[in-house]
Amino acid sequence: MSELNRRHNYGLDLFLLSVDEGITGYRDDSLETVKRNEIQYGLPLKVVSYSKLYGWTMDEIVKLIGLKSSCTFCGVFRRQALDRGAALLKVDKLITGHNADDIAETVLLNILRGDIARLSRCTSIITGEDGPIPRCKPFKYTYEKEIVMYAYFKKLDYFSTECIYSPNAYRGFAREFIQDLERMRPRAILDIIKSGEDFRISTSTKMPKQGTCERCGYISSQKWCKACVLLEGLNRGLPKLGIGRSRGGSIANVTRIWNKRMEHRVYKASSVEVWTSEFSCSCINHCMQLNEGLLSDDRCNRWFGTAKRRALIRSSTLINHLCSLLYL
Ligand code: SF4
Image 1 (cartoon, rainbow, N blue to C red):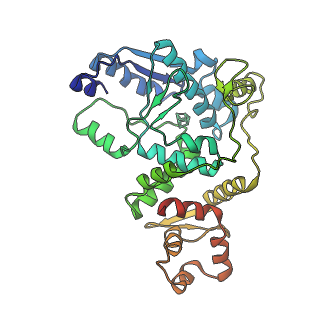
Image 2 (tube, rainbow, N blue to C red; image 1 turned 180 degrees about the horizontal axis):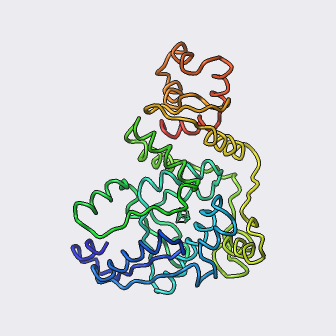
């Protein structure tokens, strides 16, 4: 942005905004890079920390709740921290570094969670236009590897440290899945984004109404925003408060099946995924081809085994979702 601003005389006043989640061995390292960037690009830097905003660091939260839900807390708190930091800087736009890989993962995650409201806006290049500080995602169509290659060949000072809690992130499963899809079909990431953009929510679907949190005034569709609910749970020693969601219905079922698959996945053979769960297809690649009518039933038999098993595969809502996502 700094380079574009200089080259094309956009006349923008740019600032750097970083969130310190309080994750030792990850954020402390990357903050050092951002501090060097402040000098290299001559842009003022603002760091907002979880410890100051919420009174908790992520390390403390993980000690209390364990690794499983760490990203739920972190994601909710970061969204709000960025808005609070942007308000402190008195800026009128917030630019985030989400790339194409991130957006494709988010589309899949929102389908799996059945989060219609987020699904309808997660592919927008600008969100929150009706709020005080809209967010833009200029790298929406740029692959992560392109960004890394650009930074590498331009010899930019950047960090590539992975968060120490990321191996437990639910998002990691979607990332791994998309990487496998990409090996079979290099356009998979852009296809998923395109499919996300083309989703149309029925006008009869009841969408949550946006209001403000009674406690902190942040945007919320409930009485209290998610960050306040999570914080209340932490402060009262009930950290599980606000984590669960009970939407019921088929989407919850799909998520349960997906979780089951992930738990039962035993090995990979080239681009072919193999699972042991009785609900799983033995090869997602061939399942997709079958949906496209590219394989004969005989061939399918070889890959999928019994007719009963194939019936299970065909009835899997998740697989149908993913197949239609890819071939829309
Ligand atoms: Fe936070 Fe999870 Fe990302 Fe780590 S992987 S920074 S805990 S959201």
